[in-house]
Image 1: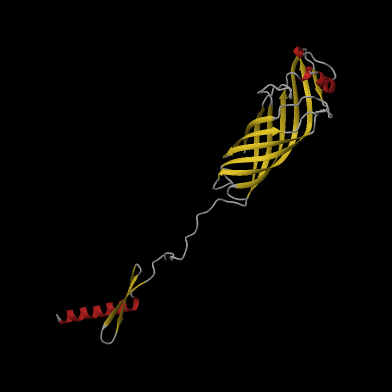
Image 2: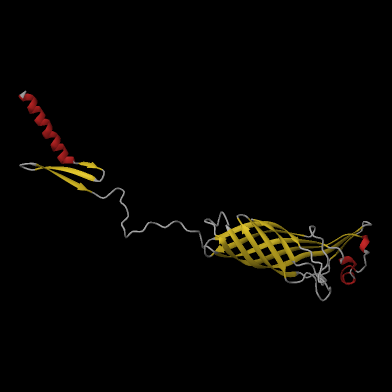
Amino acid sequence: MKKLVSIFLCTACISISAIAQSGVRIGNMEIILRKTENDTVAQITVGDPCPPCPSEKETRPKAKSVERNVNISDGFCGIGFILPDNSNDYYTTIGGNSINLDFGGSRRYQLTRWFALGGTMQYSFYNYKLRDAGSDPSFVTEVTGIPFERQDLRKQVFRSHNLAAGPFIRINLVPSSNPKKNDGFYIDLGVQGDFAFSKYYKVKTRSGEKHKYREGHVFNPFTASAIARIGWSDKAIFARYRFTDVFNSSALPMDLPPITIGIQFF
């Protein structure tokens, strides 16, 4: 019995000595046993939490804001329809067959979350299907040189191939969190200048004759327009108003309708 008690006391002393040397940590609480000459002292300390929480004076990082001060480039294509205008100021065009095609690119600089500056450069094709130009006396005098009977005209069109460029401003009504991937919901307002490097009036008669007329002094090479777009995601509805004449007003008394409405895809 005495031997058993001696073994138990030796084991306890060894265990207390080991604890005193290493200590025990539970979470952020540490227990340390120190042995003195007369007694064993237990010391309990509570450390900082792990990981440490920010102090009251510290501020948490802000959520990532919308990207700004970035350059964004897009390619686009579009189709528009020229609105007929039957007033005395314009030659009659046939709606649905009078179209505009655009192929180009745009680049914009996102100044703020709500505002951007940009520009476009594009190729534009215009096809005006006409009804009465070939039988108009002024048009015959300045362009065709020979009269055509209206009932003999099977098809008459004015076509131009243009290079166009212009600046615009963008107002973001619903900003995108990532402008490089999604444009959000926006309005563009801008101007556009066109240079017609090829322009002509073409006639087909019911008897099978074909005529093409290029009159540089009658067909203006330069035109200017105002343009507005309402866009979302990768598409936009646009309206273009040409405020200069396609035909030389000193040569012809009437011009071509100025308004085009269509859709563009980016």
